[in-house]
Image (cartoon, rainbow, N blue to C red; front, side):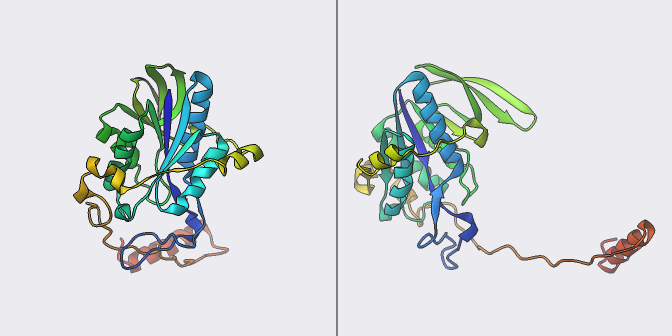
Length: 263
């Protein structure tokens, strides 16, 4: 069984900066991590491999420095790492990204694809399902447990706020992982050493161009455009009333609401 995990190297959200001209994230010089939901997907894939056998390949689309995230995945126990990278792909939105990754996945082959539910930088939860649609394979999002795994099918729990669905899905298929699916393991010392001895395969534009919508990749080809980006405004501390009775507090609140013409 060939399990492929799609991961994204994301900026540490504490230090996110935005290019005011393009509206895209400035990644240069910003600490990066593996997207947390994707890391859960790596662990789920490794556990699935331990249950039914096979290999785990990790794939990421990004600039050359994304190989750091791929080597971390190798150190966790993944068998192979692939970086999809090219200037032509820069600035891609979710639609363009999913098309590029789908083309790469068709090239390398798969039985099960696992992605994180969403990335902490974009927070859209769109790329995983879009990949499934573009590959024409069944998919289950918000997977919190893989109950049964076989060569031709999986049985999974799909999370909902008020419960879950038990779904049987034929392979090949795609799953999107939430944090409850698995707790990522630590890298081992031997795993780290092995990770830096392995080669990371690079798949570029020339290798994928015959299977891409060429007018729907990169920043110019992305149907979603950022109109404006801005940081959240800091709210004032407000008015704090001390040592007042309940009736006095209500009267003060009502006075404020009336002054602002809310009531």
